[in-house]
Every structure is written in C-alpha cells, then in structure tokens.
Image (cartoon, rainbow, N blue to C red):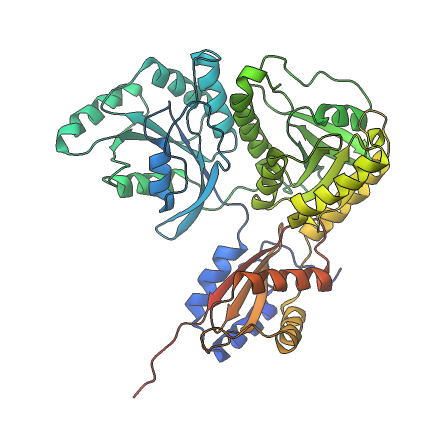
Length: 486
C-alpha cells in the first residue's frame, strides 16, 4: 500500500514532503513551530517507558505514586487483600512521560513471606524499564526488604532507592543507614509532603531509557506476538493447546508461585505466531483477591510485551468486572484486540440471546474489535481466529496520509460542527496521524473539544478508514490566544 509510511525517519511517521506541508498549514493557522514539534514528539513515540514502584506493604508506595502522577488516584490505604482496579498510571517529569506501576501490598502471611514478595516484585519488574524500591527509613531495612533486594539484583534492572518517611533533617541519618542494602545512594523522601521527590525523580529519569524500547517488530518477517489474556479458568491454556496441536502443562497448581508466561511458536494459517499463555495461577476461595491481583500483574506484563491481545470470555458465565478490567488493560496499553467467546458450543438459544445483550452493554466500548465464537475444547471455529488476528493487526498499523485526513476533517466539521458552548464554537483546524501501532492522531483546534465530540470524531474515523481491531488515541492541541501587536 503506497499510503503506508513506516516509522524511522526524523519526523516520526511523517515523510519529509508531508512534514513540510503540514508545518506550512500549521503556520497559516497561527501555531508556532516548537509547539507543533513537541506535540508530534509526544504523540508519535511508541510505548512509554515503565517504572515499577515496589516494596513491602505500608512503606508509602501508593502515596509516592500519587505524588509522582500529581493526583490522588492510587489507593492509599494498604488494606490486606485489596485488588486494584488499575495498577498503571501515566506520569510526566521534566518534560518526559512514562508509566508508573503501583504494586500495593496485600496480606503477606497467606502464602508465606517469600512467595508473596516474589510474586509482587517479579511480576512488577518483568515489564519495567526501571524500579523505584521504597523502604520505610523510620523502620530501617527489614528481612522483607532484603528479600526484595535479592530479586532486584537477579532482575538486573536499574534501581532507584527511595528512603521514604524522611520528614525533616533529623530523619536523614536513618536514610543514610540504607546504604547497607547495596543499591547505591538512598534518596531521602517524604511522599506525604513531597520533600525530596524532585531529586528522586531526576534520578528516575536517568535510570529510564530515553527512547522506549520496542519489544516487537524488530526483525523483518519475525513472528507476531500474541497475548492470550482472560480471567482464571476461561480456557486460555486449552486454547493454546488447541492451536499448538499438542497438550502441554502450562498451569502451576500452586497459587501465587511465580512462573514466567510460556511462549509458544505456533504454525497457523501458513504463518508462525508467538503465543504467550498467561495462565498459571489458579483461584482458591480463601485467596481469591490475592490470586486475582497476581493474575492482573501477570496479564499486564504479557500485554505490554505483545502486539495483539486475544481476550477470552467464558460464554457460560456472565461477563464480569474482571473481564472488563482485562479489556480495559489491553486498550489502555494500545494493543490490537480480538474478542474470543469460548465455550460457545455449550450454550442454548436463551443463553446466547442474553450473552449478546451482555456483550453490547458490558463490552460496547470495544465494538470495533473482531469477535470469534470458539470452543477451545472441540476446536470449533478455530479457523476464524487467524483472519481476525490479521484484521486487527492490519488496523493497528493503518496509516492515513495527512492530505487525505484533512480533507476528511474539513468535510466532517462542515457537516457536523462542534456544539456552541458559552457563545463560542470550537472547530478542528487541521490534524495529522503522528503514529501507528496503535494509530495516534493529533488534532489542532481553535478551542476545547468536548469528550462527546472527540468520540464522534473517532467513530467517524473508523467508518471512513477502518481501524478494525485497534484502539485509536486522539490528542487535541488548542491554539493559544496571542495579543495583537501595537
């Protein structure tokens, strides 16, 4: 396809001629060149670097995360057994953006201290580019802290040591004692009051990579990486066994034991695919919340490494909050998406009717994702899986030339202008697609565009250009008002 422009040039995914045309258009509308450059740079890069915040419970991890992201979003109360709705947040410091993974504590005695610490730390750092290790300086280094240090050394990731709860000069001596951990300089911080967090974040930026590492697509013709995700017992391992054509033991029966996801090269539809099985933790009644938390960390790690997520839903059960969380996780990670409804052959007509209604209401936000109704056990409709994955990946990599996009936006604004608010009517001036995998658009506007209108633009983009099976990221840059020269 001639319109397809790949990454690698100095202007992200815009070719030189297209970039010059775009900058001329921007100048005509009153935008400064440096404004455009910064916006394209922010929207055009790939996955953001990931920072994991680890440490034992009650050392102030969630408070520190809230301080880093600049808002009170992470759950601060380290109540045992809490399963976070979200464990990943986006942050910015000194003009650089990155993701923060909060690994809040839970009841450690349930599985024994070693297993709990290992599960939390290993799953968190698996997808991380760097780690902030939080220690309560008022307590000092504990045996649990020492156990985390061993895991961090094995992982080989850059570590920034945060000596938390240093509320004044008198506490800095306690922080100095943490040199004994052998992780380098302890950064004295009060996450609660903000003391010392700036210096610590400067150290974090030095530890994080400048440019995000691409974990896929580096080898031409290499196998596409697929994450099989879904809540426990929906049939992930059965599906992997079915596509692999052989039975493999991929599930460890001990809940909470740490195991890496199993990668499997599979020949399907004349191509080689790399499947990541995220099964491995069975839910036990008395460990339900803890096991779900481990599973969410494992799922997040697998999704971050993948190009496409196949989300499995158990057709025999109602769509749960956990199903919705996993879908949201894949969408927010910007991965291509295929919805696989498993155990479809076990349903009667009544259940199929109600399931269709559930999918419309509970998963309506991903109506753009290809869907296959399969049976991992019998192999029913498995031949439809590959075309669905290929469709989603094609949508994920679709590129719309700037000229064609702006012609579309002009027609859209003329036919469906933004509603008038406060006597003003903002309009989209022009736009460009700054990146793919997933498609990322930057729209430049004369005023703030409401969320409903942004959703309308996204819907029309899909109708016009496809983008089946992929989330779309749209950012809006509002033209700054400039005073007239006298």
